Length: 87
Image 1 (cartoon, helix red, strand yellow):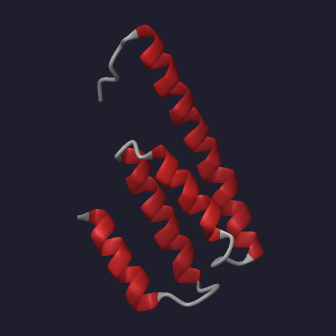
Image 2 (image 1 turned 120 degrees about the vertical axis):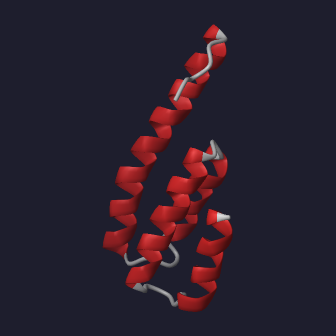
């Protein structure tokens, strides 16, 4: 449901370089990572350069790509050891 509401917010409040875009992109990224949809999360960051100011894009890219790399690395290590992550 969260992704559905984020998409609705994009539809209502979207305009190129709007400050709201940064918040929505960051929120959507967070939801996708929580759902372990890492490739989709990475695509969101890549596409964000077309709707964010240059400074906002750099900020999102730096903070979120770091998180994404850590999650993917952890997932690969867990797959190799056949362990499951406990929340």
